[in-house]
Length: 228
Image 1 (cartoon, rainbow, N blue to C red):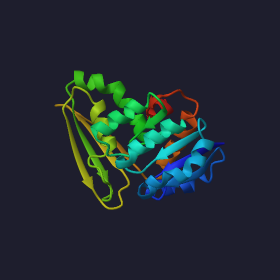
Image 2 (image 1 turned 60 degrees about the vertical axis):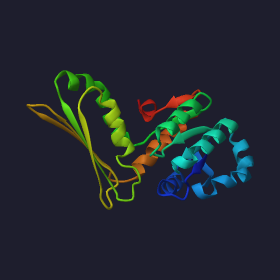
Image 3 (image 1 turned 90 degrees about the horizontal axis):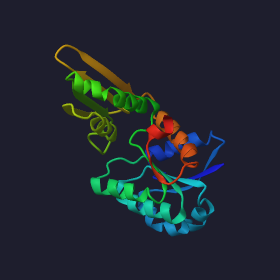
Image 4 (image 1 turned 30 degrees about the horizontal axis):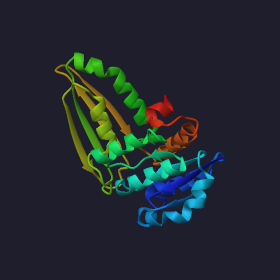
């Protein structure tokens, strides 16, 4: 059985993970903290030692504590799955550096559907450029989402190389997540849309990540590695 510890356990995603993993016989939650009590972490030393090399940290907390989490992951040799968004460039560089010493997955979106779209974009990007398509990315989320544009929209942006791209975003009450991609030429329009019906789709991706990362070597991985 894989033991996990959750950073951000009292947040929306943390609570979803708690409820969902109760139904899974391969994974057990042994503890968690929120960002307010991260600095009381010493009392968890015994737990961290007990899952060294065979447990997983899950992070759905805040960018302001990512350095602390990375240091803990390295010190106790515990794999790390990061679902937090809103990192700045320095924090991302810090994450990349620590992947030399730990098993690490970072993903702004753990849903199967979004990662299928990412895989598809990699395949068609050359042809979009060759045949003079431009792109518009529309990013719609609930009005409590902190980062705009979303991490998912930024992933699309960085994967669509060499073509002109505009990102439009809106925050609307109760919309879990809706991403629309338009590829536009002078003669036609291609449209791809992903709409989240239930947040449990993100937890399913997390479960895949936990089981997958345990067997890997140190390094930086994405959900593309997990699913494909």
